[in-house]
Length: 203
Image 1 (cartoon, one colour):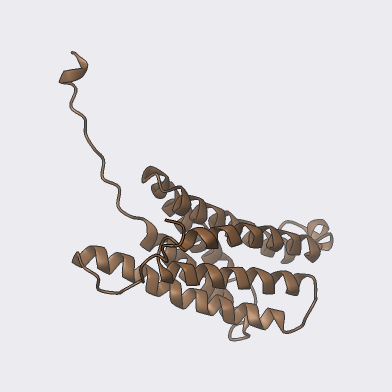
Image 2 (cartoon, helix red, strand yellow):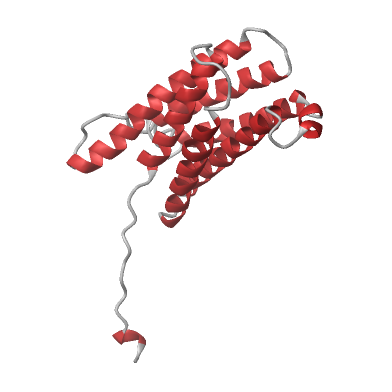
């Protein structure tokens, strides 16, 4: 059979942004409740960090790679692994992996990780200028979140923990909106929930 006789089948891959933003919305909603003192402990935050913050965003990343969307895929994958790492840190802090690891935990190392993610998020924020305004606002809030998380880890200010909680809550609300907009706009085939046009600065 010649190449001309081979029928090429195009696989349609749906936009995974709605799923990825939903995962982000859920984990930041639950995590913010703990930081703000509305709930206590980390035990029941961890499952949401692993399954929604991590696996849901990782699934979205893998589908975005199939879309050849390097920006979306990198963002979802990077933040998925962030939540995998944070959940692991919480497990260490709770002594799940033994007393030696728990006793040797240095929160300043976590602070360094937050600084690293802040650097990553800053250049992703620049990229988000050419996506839509809702996503841009989410990235700006993520930048602020990492600033407050780093300040809290380095014990710079006692109020940083609370501000991190409020910032996470705002990320959650905007991410719920963004997720709903992606899903409903596609489902109805029209702009049902506006997300704002790109700024048009670089493109």
